[in-house]
Length: 93
Length: 93
Length: 93
Length: 93
Picture 1: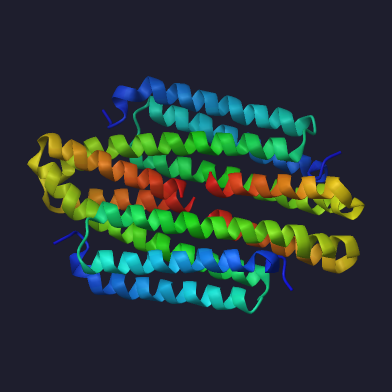
Picture 2: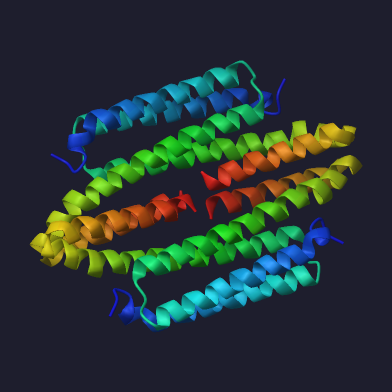
């Protein structure tokens, strides 16, 4: 069980839609579509991925981090540091 | 012919690799892998997409925009505005 | 007392340095310095601001959110939602 | 003369407003204001800086890059590469 388990089907549906967007991008490049149109489609896929990230992170804070913090001690510190590192990667990517 | 046509095979290879990363993400979610590991993998896919964008944009400036600017007139203005809008979408996504 | 209170002097020092960077940008624009050099300096200021954000957010999770979660109930939910919203704003800005 | 010279007064006004936002941030941290409120204010300053960048870049493409491209040769290649590098720094910051 993970923080995102309850929403698993929804996440899978979104990831499959993103996979479809990436395949659509391949078709666009294969048929030499206009660069700007390819870029617009990449921005859409990036935003969709980012939105999955923000959802997973929210569940992670609500469940895994909250439980660790309730337990206290070293595990709490570790989970908060780990979440902060993931947020930093997300902000910088 | 597009700005990216010469590098088409390389772009297709990169997009297929990104498609593989997205399918890997689906397997991770299906087997309830740890949230932070899923997030790390999403950051990697996002960075890979961003890098494809930056490559396409560079080719677009070098070819399509440069040609339009050399022609001058309305088409030059249009192409520069279009590129600026694509850059703004990229920066904000 | 806030999560960042212990590191307050350091945050103030960093914000004063960023203020200096913004004033430097004004001097650059006033003396018509090269666009690309102005852009490089803006990227540096943006990165410095982002790094202050990530530091504050880490302290916030470690202190305010952790305390609320230990208390439990509505306040815990509220604090986690508030942190998730702040992260989303950060990722999208 | 730079690409942004015609809009110089507007850019200076925006940079002075951002300087004011950074000083506001110092006052917020000095008086221990709530972390989330500080983060919201940092997001606003970051967005304002980003918007100055996008404006400068658009002028740069319209003027400096367009002129270099019209001239052609090595200077055209150099200016396009320089612009692409600036865009990459902007997207990654």
